[in-house]
Structure formats: structure tokens, C-alpha cells
Image (cartoon, one colour):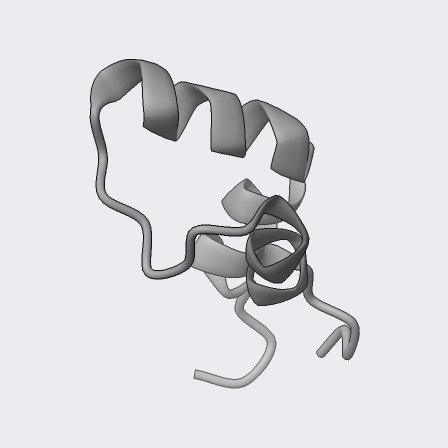
Length: 49
């Protein structure tokens, strides 16, 4: 499937991590980390493919 965009990377990258953090807390979604900065590192893609 070369040449196809990774949809999860594309969609996640289109929303700022602070917005994702807020939405998760507002919706009661359990996150794998408790600290915002750990979450930011978790959801930030630094190696574009």
C-alpha cells in the first residue's frame, strides 16, 4: 500500500494536542498518561512518512 496516506497519522496531526487533551477529558476518555506533556509527546509525529 505504498503511496497511501496513513489516515490515523493524518487525522491526528490535523488537531492540536491541547484540543485532543481537552476533548478526551470532557468526554471522559481514559488516556494512557496523566501528564499533558507526556500526552503531547505521545500524539506528536516527528518522523513524517
